[in-house]
Image 1: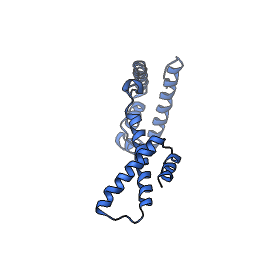
Image 2 (image 1 turned 120 degrees about the vertical axis):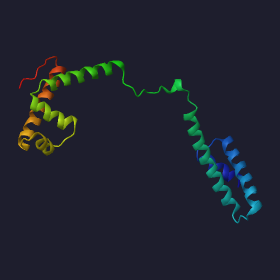
Image 3 (image 1 turned 120 degrees about the horizontal axis):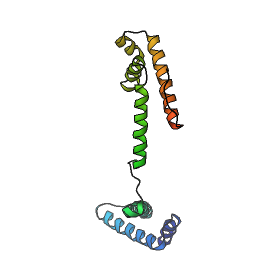
Image 4 (image 1 turned 45 degrees about the vertical axis):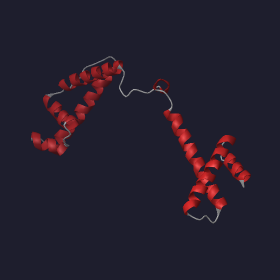
Amino acid sequence: MLLKLRRLLRSRGNNADDADDLIQEAFLRLQIYCRDHSVEKTEAFLVRTALNLACDLHRHQSHSAVVSETLKTLGLATTFPAADEVCAGRERLLHMKAGIERLSPRRREVFILNRIEGYSFPQIAQQLGITLSAVEKHAAKAALLITDWMDDEDQGLGGIEE
C-alpha cells in the first residue's frame, strides 16, 4: 500500500521527498483520527488524505513563490502617468479650452451644458428657451468644430472658423 500511495503522489507531480512526507503526514492524521472515530476503509482514508495534503502543498508552494519575490525584482508598474504625459495632457486640455472659447456664445453654452454639465438636449432647449432642433444643430456644429480644432492641434494647424 505504501508503494501504491508513493506512485500515486509521484504521478501527480510530487518529488520523492515530498511524496514520503505527505505519506507520513497522512498516516499521522489517520492515527489521530482513529483516536475518536472508527475508519472502515483505511486505504481510502489514506489516499484521500494524501491527495488533499498534496493539493495543500502545491497551493502553498505557488502562493509562497509569488510572495517571496522582493519589491525590486517585481518591477511594479506605477499607476501615475509620466511627467511628459501629464504635460501633454495639460497642453491638450488648454488647447481644447481655447477652442471652446472660440465658439459662438450660444454654441459654447450648448456644448458646455451637454458635454460638461451632462444635460440632455430637451433639458437644454427648455433652459435656454430655444427649440430642440436648434439645440441639436448647435451641439453637432460645436462637436464638429472642437473635433477639427483638436485635430488641427495634432497636425500643427489651428483655428475654429464658424
